[in-house]
Amino acid sequence: MKTKSSLRDFTTASERRQFLEKELNTTLNNIGSFPFTEKQVKNRNIENLIGAAQIPLGIAGPLTLKTNNQKLITAYLPLATTEGALVASASRGCKAINESGGAKVYSELVGQTRGPVFKVNGLDHGQKTIDWINSHLPLISQTAQKTSSHLKLLKVESSLVGRNLFLRFYYDTSDAMGMNMVTIATEGAVKLIEQKTKAELVSVAGNYDLDKKPAYLNFILGRGRKVWAEAVLKKEVVKEVLKTTPEKMAEVVYRKIQIGSAISGSLGFNAHFANGIAAIFAATGQDLAHTVEGSLGITTSEVLKNGDLYFSIYLPALVVGTVGGGTHLPTQSEALKIMGINGPGQTKKFAEIIGSAILALEISLIASQAQGTLAKAHVKLARKGK
Image: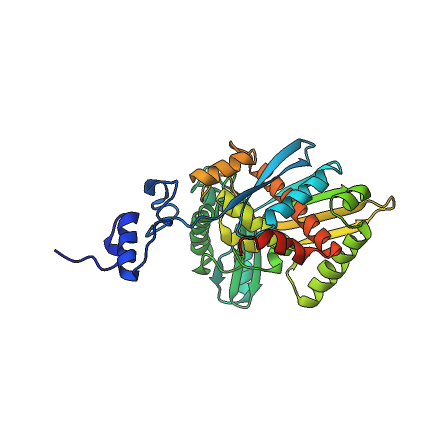
């Protein structure tokens, strides 16, 4: 009988764990404890499954927000993180927003992108290819949309550099984040383009889609969804809840967020968008690598004539979905339900809640830095048990 000597020889998670335990002389009891079945994730979410890496899950809120259709929402925020003080900070931000009348949030669908690169014979061939694409968009759309009934091609943008033609396809993927969906659709479209124009496809992903990479193209044009959120914090609330003043917070935003980010060459003019994005993504089964796009964005603040504080955030590239990916997993599905996401057609609402959560986290962190208590808070909340 052949001895099993590599992970490929095993068919179950328990067998792989036992192999690793023997190979590494260790125990993997905690990794082997998880709430989903192997059938739920096999050939869908993971290969060579051995278990699960668990992250502590906390809850912040509730947070009151009004969407651009004037619908009032009250939402709790599930945050999966190992960073002490993050959930407490989010809760404080929520309290300040709620006591000031709530947040206002707007969102806009940009579309999921895929950006293939073609090799052309020269500028003439490249421009003729672009002209053919622009004059045959209905045919290209029909070809792409044959691959999925949940997908719609919104537009195609182009950029010609020497013998390199880059296209950026934008799709409405309904409730799905849709990266696999748009890749399959784009493969169908580019075959048609190759056939009709003789442009040669080099890669269906030519880095012009800017998937999971920091770039100003996503900052300027957007990707997934754009989200804006704002709150007017009453000066009394800033003093009583945030323990500082509107003037001090506005100065931190100016000197830290605007000037500090500029001299650093940062792609994100914000305090810590990535913290909230990563924590919500992990809790709700999003693709964690899209935290890169979620970390882009701008925080602004100014003191109003009556002494209250205007505070706003802008997320230009929030890539999320409420179906597909890891959203079907038991704990992630429950986390979505905590946020009030429990049916079709709610991805827009999900994105708007995330935007409001980022607003709450930015408010609390900027207040802590204005107050001079950032280190103190982490000592108090993140070092217990040491």
